[in-house]
Image (tube, rainbow over all chains, first blue to last red; front, side):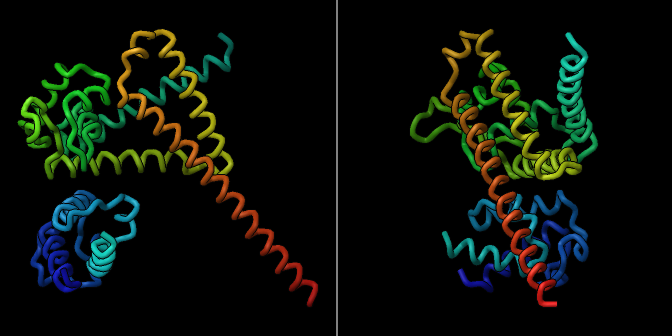
Length: 82
Length: 204
């Protein structure tokens, strides 16, 4: 899976969890400050990303992921390591 | 009972009771208010990534499979748990969490993380280490007492239960080693900083 394909899925999944249009989700949008996601929406996102990419994402890692770009880079690294 | 012992006992009982009450209140006010505290613990004992048998899950919760069946029936109805038959042996029932179950599990875990963060916030590194040592000593003593009074339980204790106790003991040791390493690293860094400062002061 290419980085662009991963990014597309990440944006789509974030838009779904934040209940907004994917076109309004920018690569550097902050999940909480810009997209108004609360902790419940963040956990919905994490669970959906785990399912989409067949990964396990620890709480420690979740704490370091704030933007779609960071999430995409994290998943690219994890998918390659797998 | 002297005053010190009385205070320790009161504190332990009060802390336990208040953690349970806080858990209950947090659940009632949160998104998952349709889950009881016991149901949330059932979700936690199944875990977000595993498929567990009824026997395993009951052992982790220290309840009978009969009691668990009632709880699982409710959780399946509320769509937090999936129940399916093992493909290789149709007699075995496997439990796993649904998407909603996994989200609830994550929220529950986060609640506990924040609770512990808050509890140790006012403590320095040395005090945190002392607290960990004291709590693990208390845990070891209470576990011994439990088995002393419940010899039958010790003989029939499942591999799952023994595994959980061993894991806790290993995790405590690992945390203690990590804290010691951090303390030594900080001491080394402080020494280097001090040497640099002394050297700079000498040059001036």
